[in-house]
Image 1 (cartoon, helix red, strand yellow):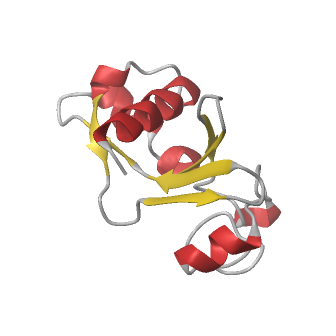
Image 2 (tube, rainbow, N blue to C red; image 1 turned 90 degrees about the vertical axis):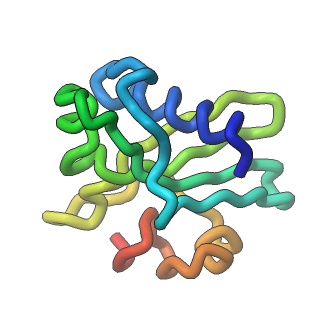
Amino acid sequence: MTNGVRNQLIAAAAKINGNVQVSEFKGLEPQGSHYAYDPATETYWAAASLLPRDDSSAAAVSVQDNGSYNVFRRTLGGSWTAYDVGLAGVGGTGCPITLPPAVLQLWGWPSKSCGPGPPS
């Protein structure tokens, strides 16, 4: 994953995390960050947690609970769309996005899941 892609992912997730400014984040959590291209659907996929800057309480709050983990999708020629999946599977909640089986397998995630934990 390039720095350009990382910056695009941060911007997409910041937009759905209470419109916190991109500058409030210092990057993506290196452990647990994933990136893939699915040629069958011509779609790029990514998943990661945002790292808030130490001095940003707004960013820290935005990455709690449901915002604690994000899945990203981008079709060829499109822009990244972020989905909060931090609480998917908790209390009967489902995934807001369906990842292709090939991507789940590549990342070592359970079938029909939208995160590295148990399926939801």
